[in-house]
Every structure is written in structure tokens, then in C-alpha cells.
Length: 478
Ligand code: DSN
Image 1 (tube, rainbow, N blue to C red):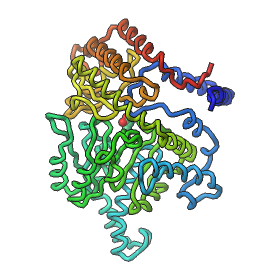
Image 2: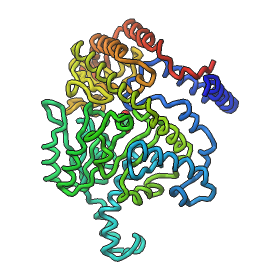
Image 3: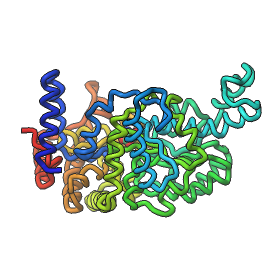
Image 4: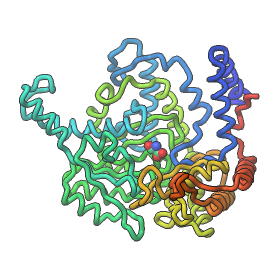
């Protein structure tokens, strides 16, 4: 596609929107300007391609399509069937999976689909078989009551939130923590790494129905072969949530023991992080769980979003191209350069470095909370997010960590030299920020003091760093 065609497409779209609600058109334009200006280091964000973005803005959005390809509850789904089948085919080919379900609207949704597929397979199906009925509506009231209690009485073992696990892996405030009797495995306090012996010990003691691996703030690889052996040893279903590192799996950076797809019974992901697609989710599994997974809608999902499935098909086709592997390896090279730059300047990093796309700075080394550091960096044009560190004394809200990731800046084309320059900017801001106090003089976990002149200077340097790496260079809205 020529540069002019992309500019024309986005300009025309904004003109059409502006004629109805100009403030929305302005906000869309402003978002592009903001993203172009800021050093985006949020580990879970990226920049989708113009083709992926455009695939979402059209009349596919108007269709209801509950059901699956060729088996819908609505008439007229032939074009939705086409895009859903394409997205699933690209996903299967890309990840080497037997089955792909591309309807989940988000990562939480994908995890709920997976949990309920496992519960249906491991708890509901045996109960139906025992009662000699085909579906739950045929159970007696007593059997139905007993099954509901049984469904609500299952165990899950997942990585704890402060060790880098995700809130949907059994955190009590999330539905996963309310649905399951949950226990967590953490990381070794000395190294910050997953201790597989400890995971095996916890699995032996707790005997979970589901063992979950995957993370949103753990800067290392996980050995999924060992995790599968642990799951098998206690009869657990092994589920991996690869939302954060799906792009590294797709790009063949994580292979062998570190590729979850051959080892897990079921794999979930989002499509918008390192995978660089539209916002959404997806589930991969073998034939044993495929039927249950396909019941995700209407089991736990509202009607699928056909326009987003179209964009998933486009982004997955992009990820199957050879240059995606190069992109994925540059994400990791950049994260490692950023980690080395920070370490050289004296930062304290959880696990002492990274094997993946993210780095977790323990900002207690700078005398700050995560919240103070996040805001000071934001004032300086550096967009990150605060995150708990293992055994965090400041909890999940204020935290003691800053999570930084490289998928987005790598998409823009920044390389290891720019990562070192970024480390310098981050270190400068964090060393020059001091904790503030509450009006009564007590120390505040949120307030901070940073000279605005320094923040402006760093913002300018951050913006200069981006000058040679234009975002969406093919799109000119002027
Ligand atoms: N919110 C995503 C993240 O930032 O990691 C995960 O859900």
C-alpha cells in the first residue's frame, strides 16, 4: 500500500467522524500526536499496523455472530465466518496449535473461557456421564445442586501477583480468586526466579485441578516442560497465559521448553501486546478441549466482535511473515540493553536483568514508591506503569516497582543505542526525584518533588530520541 493511500484512509475517516462529533475526531487525532511524542515503555502496549487498525473500523462491527464458524445462532454470517476462519487458521499455523478460538474480547475473557472449558471437561462432563444425561438441563434438582457445588469447589495454583503473575490467576479481588480455591507459588526471595521444586511441592500439597503459568511482570523465561511435568504428577490441567510474551513465541524467540504451545493443555493470550494486533484475546488448545472452548460464547462471552476478528486475521498474517521473527528478537535485545544500561547506572532490577520484553526496576533503590516514580517519569515524557515487586511492602496500589517494556519502541525502530540513552533518562529522573510529604508532615507514598525544569529538559531529550523513528510515518493527518 502506498503512503498516500494510508494517509487518505485515515484522513477521510476523521473527516466523516468530524462531521458528526468533532470532539471525537479531535481526540483520535490528539491520541496520535501524543503517542508520537512520548517514549512509550508500557510493557503491555504496542502500535498495531495501519492495516490492522483499518480492519476494525467498518460494518463487520454491525453483525451479531454468536456460535462458531458455520454454526451460528444468527442468519447472514457468511462474511464473519470468513474472517473468523482466517484468524483461526493464521493462529493455528503461527503457533502450531491444533485448535484456535479467536472470539475472546480480552485476556480476562480468554482466561474465563479456558477456566470454564476445563471445568466443563473435568467436572461437568463426568457428572453428566454419571447421571447418564447429555446436558445439564436434564439433571435432577439434587444432581444439579451437587454439580454446582462441585464446580465452585475446585482448586487452582498460579503465580502470585507480587511475583509477577496476573490478577486473573487467582487474585481474590478478581473473579478467578472467587471462583477457585486458590493458592499461589512465588519466586525465590534471593534470586527472584521461579523455583520449580517449590512449585512441585505446592502442587503435591494442594493438588490443584488447574496449574497456571504465565505472567505480566516476571522478566524471565519459564520452563513449560518442567511445569507440565509438575501438572502431570498431580493430575492437573496445565494452562499457560502467554498474553505478555505471545509475540516472542510467534517470533520463535521462545522455543523448545520455553514455547508453551506443545507443553500446555490450553494456552490463552491477548492479541495486542508483543503480538502487535488489535485489542482482544484468543485461546489455543488440543482437540480434547476444543469443543468446550468453542462454547466460550455465550458461556462467558457476549457476542463476538467480527471487526476485531478481522483485525486479528490481519495482524496474525503479519506475524507469520519472516520479518516478525526479526522484530521479536529485537524486542528482547532492546530489553536487555535497557536492563544493562540501568544496571550500569546503579538501578536495582528484579532478578538482575531480563530474558524477555520487560524489565522491573525496584525503585526502593531510589527511595521512591512505584507511584511516585511513575508520575515523575510521566512528567518527563516517559510513559511506564508502576508494578508490585516480590514481597512488596507498598502493596499493589503504591508498589515499589516500575515495569518497563520494549515492544512498542521496537516497533518504532529504536535499537540498543537508544535503549542506553533511555536508561540514562530514566536514571536521571529517578535520582532527581525525592519523596514528598502529606500536609501534616507525614511521608506520602504518592507525592514527590521533581524540578519542573529538569522534567521539561528530559521530556525534550525523550522527544529528540524519537525524532529519527517516526510513528506511523505513512500517516499524515495535516
Ligand atoms: N493490563 C495488562 C498488563 O498491563 O499487563 C494485563 O492484563
